[in-house]
Image: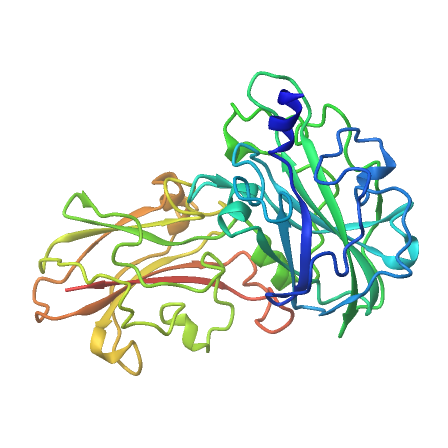
Length: 412
């Protein structure tokens, strides 16, 4: 009895749901799961894999209104008013996966498509489940824009991957929210899949040993539906952003002098006329950013990565030039204030782009600060330009044209 009590103290279930950060009272819009409570579903072939409940009616369940392109906010809890474990045990490491199905299907048959997946974040060395716990059980999930308006089941799922060396399958914690989607721009749905049926015992993403390198985790189930090329870019792990400076051989702490970016920090700027092309931020004077001392004439190494730390630089398919500029900080980067201090493009003899070189150098490149530069505070702007979509004119669709990856640091 004691072992069961300790084991159950690790579990979780969905308590709250709403739109754009505002949630309703406990249980509103959520399909109940009285058979399981907060316990996981262990049988991947069980009908309970749909919503932690195989036999339910949504007739009397309130619909949570949400806009297509907006966020559904969901909140997990261990039990009501739990003191020791509020969300779930921190030892439950694993991904978060969200799917949708037309409500009229009741989730049966080929009805489901995947709208969200998040696994291991190498920049902070945490799984999605741990990030949810750190965020007090909250997760915001974007509802696709290019789907028909109507009523849907949104299936939220937390995974607890098996302990190293056990050879077991993961524990699944599915729950469903009933939503009414307005403003959908689509006329049809993507390819649909059955639950149960999307996972099988022995699938690499289901029995992934946590003793392995977590950055190699393979997501189980169907492919992620991205409702536009731009959304595909936001979900892609091919991009890059400025994370470090090294000054005369001394590597500074990550993000120490770099300006804060958008939420989608490694996402490119697509519009070459956008003000975001300067530094991908308007907060040049951010009090969160230190201004780092750099002697004139010294070498500065810029470091870009996909997700921080020593993660890879960028997808090798994103070939193109690399540039570095400077501007007086007081200008905020506005107007005719920028001057170029570095450029590297294409070598026709070897068929090598600058990006090819920096991929091999793991995201590092060196520039020299001009020795005759007047003392003062400056913006240092590194930029990668990916040309793999540049054969199509910007505006032809949401991903056409060159992709620009600017990042700025403050130096004195």
